[in-house]
Length: 75
Image 1 (tube, rainbow, N blue to C red):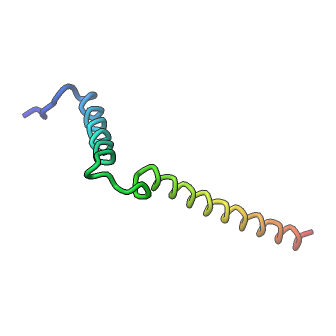
Image 2: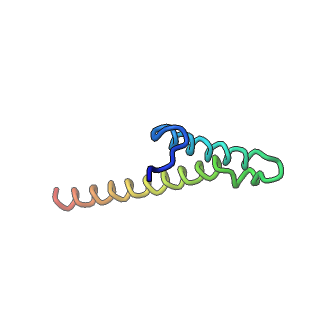
Image 3: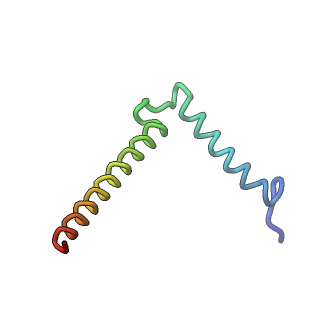
C-alpha cells in the first residue's frame, strides 16, 4: 500500500514546518494564550545566547590563563 501524500513528497514536510511555526506564532500572540514577555521564545533565545557567550568567554579566558602560565614555566 503506498504511503498517503497530501501534496507531494517534497512539499509535505515544508507544509508541516510552516503549519507548526504558524501555530506557535498564533499561540504566542493570541491575547488569551500569550505568555508573559519574559517567557516568550525571543526572550528565552536571547537569555540562552547570552549564557552561551558568557560560558564561552569564561572558557577562553581560562585557556588563555593556562597558556600564559605554561609559557612562563617554559620560558
